[in-house]
Length: 379
Image (cartoon, rainbow, N blue to C red; front, side, top):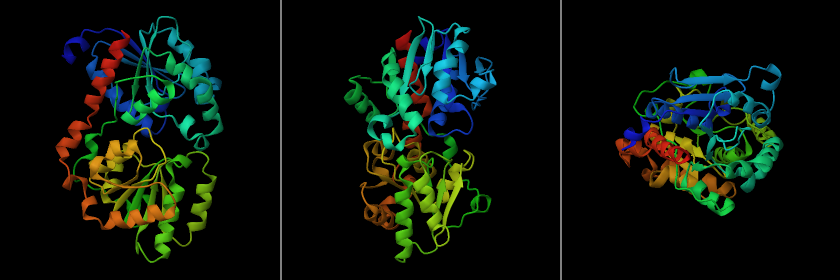
């Protein structure tokens, strides 16, 4: 059914490619994987990707055209500001039929261009203090207005769908969940401790260093347990790029530097992530809020033992196959870490669920077909 109508469609699709600039974090990887699938689903479509800087996608196709900002001064503008001021003129020449607002914001488009928007989260309404001031202002000014212009809206989780209905009174049935790459499947292991300079055994967190990820609580819980005589020989590995509003986190790391084995290793490549998950004694994801929780899915697929904060979006990613803790003070997480390390039920995810079943249910191809169905609504 899908192939019959996909293959008949000739169209020009514009894509906001700002999240694809530089090293890919969660949102960028989500967009890149879906683009890879759209390339196969729409063999007669032409895709135009608009960005301030050069982007890279995990495939090569002559039907993908990259419009990179040619003016060096404009390329230095803040991300949303560039989209609003400069991106529209790049779109004008391409006779677009549809524009995919990959992170909800829109440029100035010609009349008649239909819009499909992806909503990832509502941080600016639910946890505004965790955002940079610039990003918060941009969301306050443009987010709701731009989302309301879409002819079709997709979300990344049932939790985001429910919040879209609650906060904006908008309903959508198009839940395009993150998939998990087959790269996270298998038993190959790279010894990464020397490459990144940490010691084993280790507890792992993978997150951009910013307040919403709640890493300060994890670090303090780890220090507390070490000082109480638990976790002897363990280190804590923090994998993730530099974020924002991280002054408090840096202060905690500075105080812990001399006495505890805590390693902020920075950004870890996609090639190394599966092994990093696989060799961890425990992966902890303590965020106060997420649109979904891709690292939980990746850790599960890699066979890691997982502990996450008890929020609906995390349960959507982890199901019954991981452990959860209630968000609260340091005691909650400290107790949960010890329990997760000792609890036989929270051992390898593959001991509790079928590897094949996980990759079938969390397939980028399945998610892309839902996105394509939403896209068709705009035609």
